[in-house]
Image (cartoon, rainbow, N blue to C red):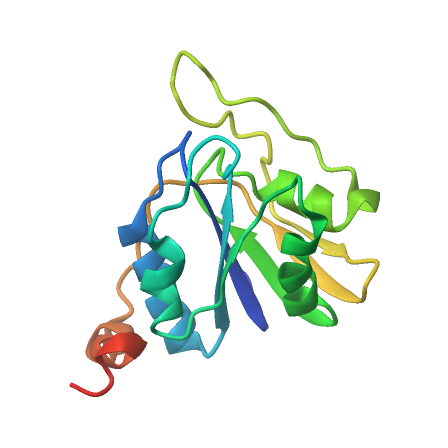
Length: 172
């Protein structure tokens, strides 16, 4: 969904149900670099499956990557700190746990969540519209509907500057 004036974009990816789509994450990081938005990755569902080397992959290029373990509230503190006083968005695949993560860092929001569809093996589009919510710790967060692809459309300026949108390729 169209969003404006973002300071931070949190990409919520799950270890399973749905499986991580790192190509989609890479596209979002490129868009964040192009738009001067701080990207961040929050990994959910670590109680169901380990996250492997995802934190290492993105940590090496300077992307804050937080493993969110709901049994350890301290693991959520970096996410809270990153969004405090900022204008942010939580984005990612349907069923990755965006609203669940928001409910853990700001229980006052009481966002609706749902189980993964066992028949389809993916989320059920519980969040159906983008809403800008005031955070109790200060700042605003947009909880966005899930999706499984990203198109940049006909933004030719973006295509011309694409090579500069990948921090791990700067030196090359």
